[in-house]
Length: 222
Image (cartoon, rainbow, N blue to C red; front, top):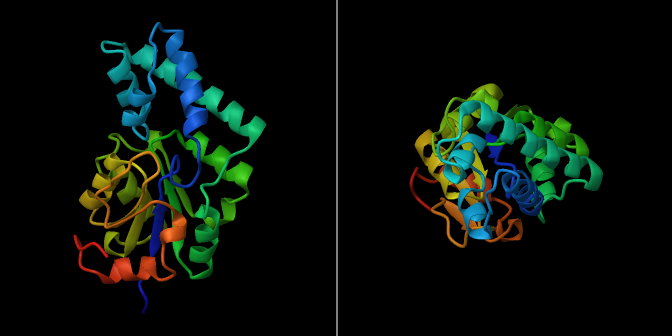
């Protein structure tokens, strides 16, 4: 019996090119709190959970305030997506279809709220391709903890050893390693990623890249 295989997609910066949409939403909500966000600070924390991000920008912020800022920021982000649409990273959509056709199970495992992922999937019309969505509210700790990927794999019924994580952030790559999963690093915001297979874009992925990753020993780059 052939073991099921899974592709676990980070969303922002991996599946969709959403950095500018998030950047604008963060600038607005943090400016209202008297904080001036720099692009360097934004890039350093992009892909982390909102509570981690807000505590970094606004130390000592109460839990109630953190929640209020987070909800407002994500509301503004979803408004932009519904109004302007979501942009797949070049080649990402083709790989979603290719993996689906090859029988791979797929999930979104993101540090963003589940509502964001559901909104993006709906706007893109990809709902049938993802068997699970795991968001920030589904886990108690964020990346680099492996919980989000382990839960996504569990929901798909696929073992870690048969799962490949697609990520664009160092914290996500580390989370994949801790989960015992192979990783493909999409080097969009970060020039270097300690992934099993780092690439600058999906066009660099060979047709058999996912199969070769699963066949290689854990901790061995291909």
